[in-house]
Image (cartoon, rainbow, N blue to C red; front, side, top):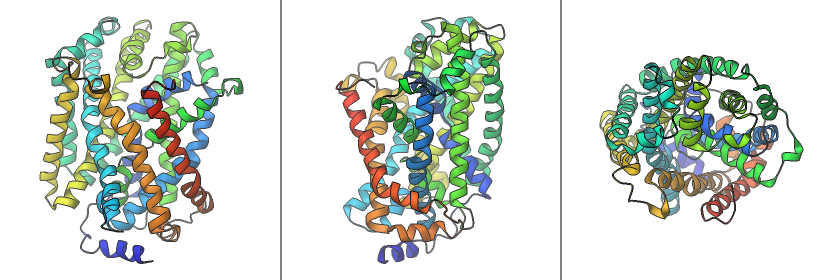
Length: 465
C-alpha cells in the first residue's frame, strides 16, 4: 500500500508530460518498436532451424502468456508512475536495487540503438542500390563483406540513417514518433503482404509455405522452446525500457489490455508475413533446403539478394523488400532512442531538444565504433567478437533477461498485483487477470532464467543454439 502511494505521489508536477493523441497512436508506435529487424531476419531463420510450423505454434503460445504478462507489467508501471524506467523503479524506493533495476532497463536501449543504426545504414545502402538497379552486383558473394569492411562507406550510411532517427525525435512524441508510426506501419503491412504474395507464387515455394505453417511434432525439441522464448522476448520490445516509456505517454482512458493484444497481433502478423516472404523464397531458390536460411546478416544481405537476382521481377521485389526493412528498422530505432531521450528528460531535467542531441551523440560515438569494427577497428574484438556482435551479446543475452527479471520482482515483491490490477482496470476489464498473475509470479521468472542461462551457455560453446 505504501509503495502504491509513493507511485501516485511521484506523478505530481508531471502533468505536462508528452502523450500519444489516441490508442491507435500508441498501438502503432509500440508496434513500430516491436516490428523490426528481429522479425524480418531472425524470426524466419529460427523458424526454419527449429522445426517450422512447430516453432510457430510454440512461439504463439508463449507470446500469449509470457509475452502478454511482461508487456502488461511494463506498460502499467509506466502509466502508473508517468516515468521512464529509472523514474518508474525509483517511484517505489530509493535504495540501490531500485536504482539498479531502473538503470539496467534504461541503459539497454542506449546500447542497442547505436549498433541498430549501423545495420539500418546497411539496409539504407541496399535500398539505394536496388533503386539504382544493382541487383546482380548485390548478389555477389563478396559484396556485403567488402562493403562493411570499407570504413568510409559503412560510416556514411550509418550517419545518414542516424540523422533520420534524430530528426524524428526532435519533432516530439505526437508530431515525430507517433506521426511517423502512423504512416510507416500501414505501408509496412501493405508491402509485406505484396512481397509475401510474390514469394509464395515462385516455383517450388509451396513446400516452404507448408514447412512454415503446418506443425510437425517430429521436429519438436527443447531447443524449439528456448529459441521461441528468446525470439518472443526480443521481438516484443520487452526489457528495453520502451514499454515503460510509451506507457508513461499513455492516457488513463486507453485500454491497456486491448492495446497489448493489438500490439501482439500486429507484431506476430508481421513476423508471420516475414516468414512467408523469406522461407518460401529461399526454399524455391535452394531446392527445399532449410539450411540455406543462414542467421543474421548472411540471410538479409547475402542469401536474399541472391534469391531476388534469380527472379524475373527481382529488382522490383528487392526494392520493395528493402523498403519494408528500412521502415521496420527506422521505427524500431526511433523507439529505442526515444526511451533514452525520455530517461534523460526525467533524470537530468533538460529540454527535449538537449536530451535528443545527447542521445544523438551517444548514437554517433558508439555506433561509429560498431560501423568501423569490420574495417579500421577490426583489431578490437572483445570475447573474440566484433564490436557490433559484442554489444548485441551484452544487451540481448545478459542485460535484457536481468531487466525483465527485475520487472517481475518489482511487480510481485514491491508494487503488488493489487496495484497493477487497479491501474489496468482504470480503462480495461482485465479479462486475463488470473493468467497474468500466474505468469508474472511463477512462469515468467523461470522462463527468463532459462533464456539467460541458455544464451550464456551458447556463447561459451557449452550448447548449440
